[in-house]
Amino acid sequence: SKTSFKRTKPHLNIGTIGHVDHGKTTLTAAITKVLSAAGGAKFHKYDEIDKAPEERKRGITINAAHVEYETEKRHYAHTDCPGHADYIKNMITGAAQMEGAILVVAATDGQMPQTREHLLLTKQIGVDKIVVFINKADAVDQEVLELVELEMREVLTEFGFDGDNTPIIIGSALQALEIRHEGVTIINYVILKGLEMFHKMLDEGQAGDQLGALLRNVKRDDTRRGMVMCKPGTLDLHNHVEAQVYILAKDEGGRHKPFTSNFSPQMYSYTWDMAAKIELIGGKEMVMPVRCLNYIIFYNLFFD
Ligand code: GDP
Ligand code: MG
Image 1 (cartoon, rainbow, N blue to C red):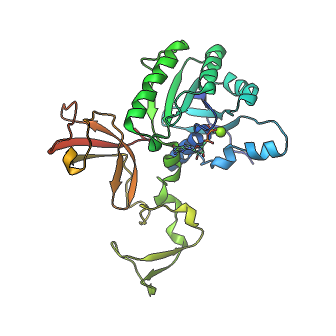
Image 2 (cartoon, rainbow, N blue to C red):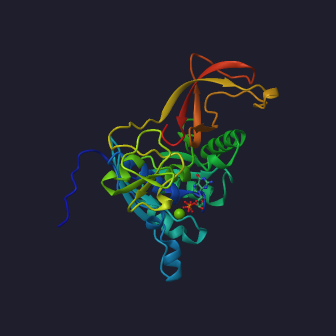
């Protein structure tokens, strides 16, 4: 039997729009993945959302896909619109129900024909609440991200949106999707079949052991370098760290140019690395690449 929907918070219809291949479906999947860790969504894999190749093969209409999720404040129905120019009809059908849109633009391309077309359509349909997600931050330099942000603010203004104040979030949908933030919970320890160290069986593993764990129902693709195995509930997840850092000077192999808050470096720790965003603290406005210590907060790009 079906469970009944309990209306406990405001409902909003939103969706992803933007040029084909800029990451709309990846972002949709990533949002469900991240929220599923907090119990706010059922994780929908990329293939469940984008059925386009299959539909194309069968010669049927390419439809917009719908997923639901909730945050602390709101419940959402999210429409993932197809980006191809030929599917504009479906894009309109999808956007017609929207009260707000996430415009996805790949930093690798910047604005493209359907970025503009979708913005225009969204405006004409009457959606004026927009958030821009500059995607693929992992694939470009900081300078490019800054240029794309400037460009997007101009385009928003050109189409009658509030370009100066529209929230623009920079990140990597693919990294957010691939990194298993809920890794601690998805791999259930009841499925650990055995432990080995240097090809010998172990009765018990201890923190720091260089061991191999035989896990049932976990495929190679489910794991990623940097993941941690632990007893459920023993580790907390965090999305930022405060650090004292030494910035290498140019002649030490460091940066040539200074940087400010919002600079997005790749962050490394133990065995993992990911795109991060920094915020300077203690009233500092700029960091020069000279031999000095600085205090910085590193943010996980996707969660800020
Ligand atoms: P859509 O057509 O806008 O729905 O785009 P997709 O979500 O299908 O993504 C298009 C391609 O871009 C796929 O190959 C994705 O794996 C890739 N992609 C999506 N997000 C990112 C990202 O953050 N970084 C990189 N490097 N590639 C991405
Ligand atoms: Mg798509």
